[in-house]
Image 1 (cartoon, rainbow, N blue to C red):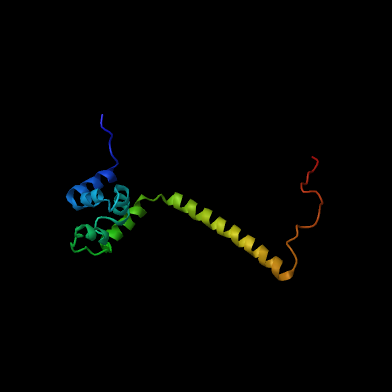
Image 2 (tube, rainbow, N blue to C red):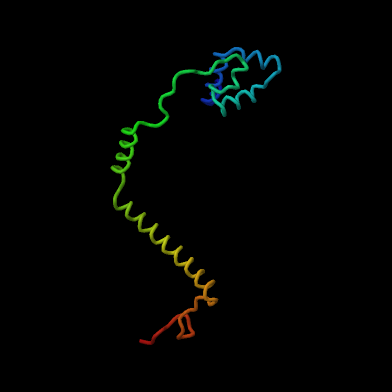
Length: 134
């Protein structure tokens, strides 16, 4: 049973088959398969590095790199349609509470730095728990 290769390795093999000059460079000892695969994987097939092997990059005119505004808007609208309003409200409440807690901590630090006095617990009973007899 033959071992199945990773899809990226299969694509690299196709790239090498389409560009036999790469094979000659490896046989001459100018490069290793590992180096070439890493360069192909990181840089892509259209990089200028491959010009040294006699490979011309694709010179097809690129489409506008910005997505079409209609597609962008349809994606946004689709995302909003999929949202559960109750879940969104829950997340907003959690975020609001977290921001409030952070603001409280920051204000306590600011009060400590400004007045030289730290935040004191309320005076009264010296016991942290108050129990009453029924």
